[in-house]
Image (cartoon, rainbow, N blue to C red; front, top):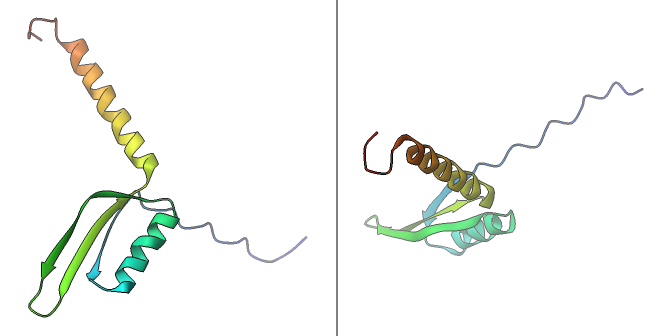
Amino acid sequence: MSDAPAPAPAEEKLSYRLISGPDTREFCERISAALAEGYVLHGSPAAAFNGTSVIVAQAVVLPAAIASADAAVATAVDQLDEEFDGEGHA
């Protein structure tokens, strides 16, 4: 029997991340790493000029988060349908 402490659990991935920074190779490497971790791009990238350099941002999400959100919306719509009698009356 070992007295060594149990390894710490891996940190849970966030469902949504907004990655931002100067428009450099390092920023692109951060996006590439997120994609390699299983994230997918969400929406269009954004760019702004701060007076010195271009700052970019890209949202990434885990596909499971999208599926979960879609399921929640479908459930809410189904519940709304059940509350109405078909003629717009609750």
